[in-house]
Image (cartoon, rainbow, N blue to C red; front, side):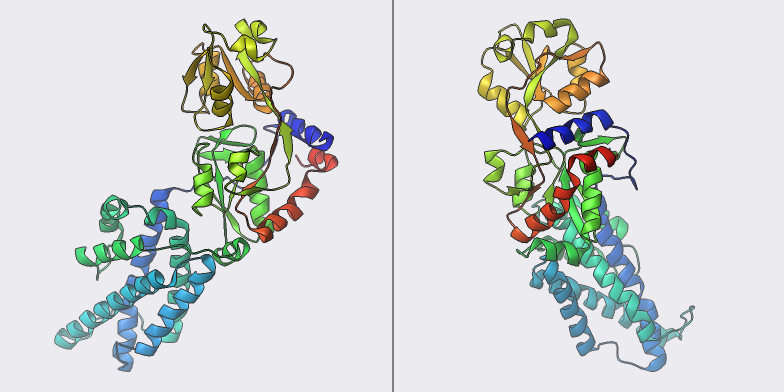
Length: 418
């Protein structure tokens, strides 16, 4: 515990001093889906070149063994990511059919009006690496977007995007609709987490982006100690980190539904979360305390009983352990729910409430960031809790994370890491 406490306070002292190797940002659901559409469009755009080669070499348009091999390869590559086989096969069967239609249409035009393909003709062997690469890119994009694709509203929500992004010759309103329909059938199946991360090349990190010094989204850029840590963990797995926005109220659902591989950002170990997943070794320890407007902070020095008064306004951010603690322990004070945890401290400082129950590391940081306006009113803590990386119950993943994490939280490593 002493080691954790020392490391814990290094966070407050050094916050803002870290330099990140590259900017971290939340992935966009819209961008994830549009990436699939753009890749499907790119794949169909290769078909005139394929048609030209087959015209020049008199090769048949329909090549059943080749199509079967492509479709099966896609299913085989998708399986380690957890992509169910049949929807993947249907997706690539659709693309194969559209490819044949484009080639057939061009051959009919050339037969009627003469061959007119303007670009240099290559060979099928030269074109196949590009198509094989697009197969991998499409599968990775589908894997990342799977939680969005499965939503009931998916097809209606992205019909306009399909109209905009699927533009090359060969697309029709019907085929755009078919593509969205088959994407909507995508399903994830359980596979070992490390296998999924390795085969996809991605570590999907759920984070709230509203809890300094661990995770903070500001000006469309994520920063914080857990953002830095997530980037290093992804590098350990030879993967790229993909940051997925979650909230304190939904992070357990996101983990249990397979939308993320890990959740990071100052997540406290609680029984409710342990009922859904598991935690790494703790890397920080602290507890709830009282943050107040400096003008009234003296009245809360005695602790929680002074806060629980009818004339006191207690501000909470919804869905997390702060609100849970207040709901369970504060019965007379006025509870003010403020939905944006990034702006909640400014709201407190400007008088929209009198006090807030929050973690001691956050209380000290916000008092530092709002000098003369916000003060830590209670010198001790009301609770005790550890913070750790939240994960599914996958023993190999837990071991791999802990094998990497534990050496990084030694006192000397913590002091010299930033």
